[in-house]
Length: 337
Ligand code: CP3
Image (cartoon, rainbow, N blue to C red; front, side):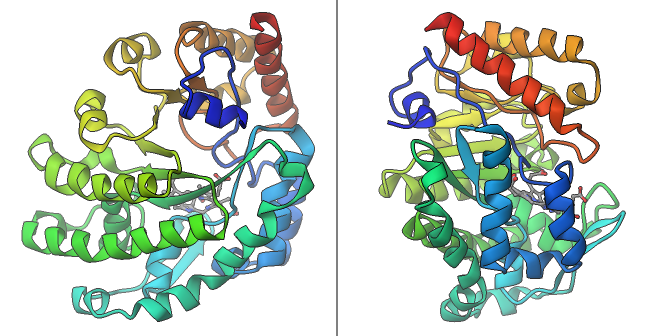
């Protein structure tokens, strides 16, 4: 059994595997080289040859325990015919789309538009270098995808008014979820053997709307993933009540963000936990990194835990610091085995 599956399925706390969100990304010179030659980010995500190379870059460099397919959560809006661009120093920029367009969208055209993503997964999955490692597929949570589709750029920039129209939100979530579910199934059928759901904007939802906007739609997805006997990791960023979330959605693990107190979370939830450490620590010194890494490893010593961060690796990160972090985690594993 792979290291991640030992934690996720066997609930083994004797091993602490490691992979990192955005492990393939701008902090790697070999990624920047490919990115510079491919100005259009969406097109790059649809290029199976390059996607395979990029997905394997961090594995070749660092020997992590899992690869995550190089793609983006916004490939689902793209698959639904919405224009998706990534603008320099601004981030995602989406075109307009109406609820009717989503409702009536043809599943065959969705599959066709995203076929290169599935082709990439098929190309990567049997690589020798991934022996005893997992290949993680992923989607955005229904709420987060809705936020990008309606707001059309990151809420960091500005949040549009539409978010008071409850009926529109409920209907949109229902329609969007069919395609997120399809995207999950296609990735699993192509060879992804763990699925992570990134709900980056879960923290925007008021308590009174959590059940309708987050719990119920995400529960449908976790059920789909479970029906394939594939582990499901959820990352509801900035959510307040993890206990309710876990009880309703029943994921196999929760990725925590860096605002979560690790000591509190192990008292609240019993399922495996992933991540938590602030990626900014990687911009600091080796000494600080060692201290915080050992803190997380210590708190989770007797809890099933996958080492990861509380958000993605920052572009300014020195790859040597990533290597240092991985060595620390490996050393901890040797000490406790
Ligand atoms: O983790 C991985 O290595 C796999 C690939 C991956 C990417 N995006 C590649 C990417 C994953 C899992 C994502 C998830 C994603 N994408 C999320 C959820 C996690 C989170 O960050 O909250 C979100 C919200 C998005 C949407 C998105 N894509 C944003 C906001 C941006 C801009 C970010 C920025 O720093 O400019 C992207 C672009 C993106 N997706 C990049 C990468 C490597 C950077 C693109 C570049 O090279 O310019």
